[in-house]
Image (cartoon, rainbow, N blue to C red):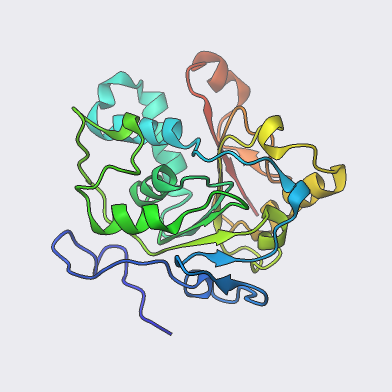
Length: 259
């Protein structure tokens, strides 16, 4: 098994190490690899159920990403309670491999995982997952071809985070999550509303919720937002309703798995 660089100690901006998509079992020990095949571009292809959702080729993580970029660059725009909320949410994913459900073009979500201190990133999408965009931004910070305009400053992009190992898998959500060991990952789930999810069966939808809860590591959680209908069963929001009434501009949600 090839060596995975540690997030802090072995990766730095001067490192000449080239990042490329890894096999999922390097990022999630014990994952079931049967039926996953690597394609010519470096992504992995598994079981794709046609009725498991609609195709949409972008990522919805640009808004969650902007919260944390603003927290770093312009913290005064947030109240003390909002800053505490973001910092508490960040802790859920520090040192955890993140699985991004319905990742689309995954550049923004990958950057978000890096900023949150995740140790690895796996993007899941039946249709539009592209490992090439991560190859670009992990190895060439001057390349802006795959970067959302919200992440650019004066048309330029400065990488102020350290890249982490990654993998891209083309597979439907339930089929992939069934591969994942219990309590082993954190979950990103952005923009999976009624249109993206599509006319899936109630049984499939229920399986998504139960599988999300099963695979989330205790103490980690699901990072989502108000429009997403796909959420793990039994997860607890880190804030109550009163917080969101007072902070109605906060559209992201952190759902934690507790003992």
